[in-house]
Length: 334
Ligand code: TXA
Ligand code: MG
Image 1 (cartoon, rainbow, N blue to C red):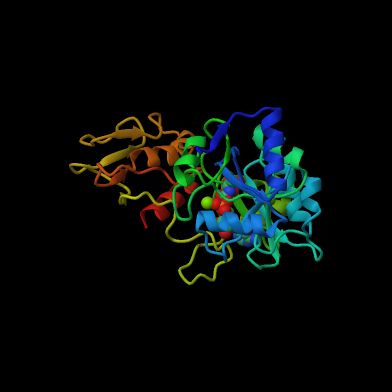
Image 2 (image 1 turned 90 degrees about the horizontal axis):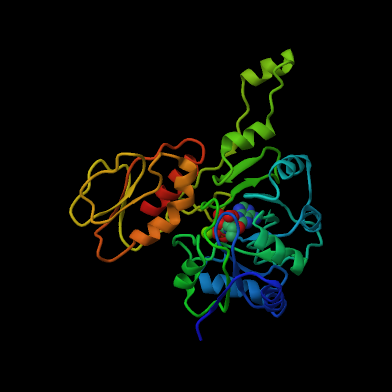
């Protein structure tokens, strides 16, 4: 049986919620990428997510909820969480917080650790589903571990074939790169994964500088920065999912290309794409990183064809959202 790809309506919502309650999996759109969702309190359902994705068990999952009140039921809330949630929820921000002592969420979701990552997506379809479900849905990106994240319903089908019975179609994802993951469980917040919300914007909310206040002005001379947690090769870093190699196409990728060799496909950026490629897709002809981020994974998939010897990528400025793009490209080409 082909998996069903359905548009959202009241019947589909009911259908998805019953599948979740019975311990099954439903793929659904968010504003970042498509997620593969399971009831976060159900060990067997969450285990199925790990199995299907072939995901290492030490890599925890993000739990999705409809609203802040639901989020607070599961974690130890604090001032930093409050600030960031107020500014960015619902939206593409994931907060890592300490689990409450009596937290019913499956240990598998947290990979046995004492923190839980939570996100409230803004996508109206995701909102509708989460509201109807009421609790937490553990949902990693709906791709096999290490591969390119899905930004369209068809990508999910391409990844899992018939194994995921229900895929809800919300069209192409608005942002195209995953949520920014910020750990607020310790004394200083740490950016574990650069994402849809840029470091600069997060810092503006975390460390606002009051221009009229002289004392603060002096303090802001030593401008506070959001601690960025770099992925290490030792496996000891705090966001286990930030593996050096990820988002992999099946053919090689070459970054910062200045020329194209015969047989190569080009992922272009800006008004002057390089010549000589078998196939060219331009992430943003006008050189807009926001547009480029939205197209990134879909174009990588489209160029990932055996008839190409490699995907070569033109330089993209690593500013603003470009930082998340650079991060994904680095891992994809590792
Ligand atoms: O935009 C997104 O975040 C998408 C959509 C579906 O919401 N989800 C997503 O999930 O990207 P996933 O599993 O592909 O990536 C989750 C990231 C991983 O790097 C994981 O290690 C990290 O979040 N993470 C999850 N729980 C964590 C925790 N308790 N502590 C530290 N990092 C955590
Ligand atoms: Mg992922």
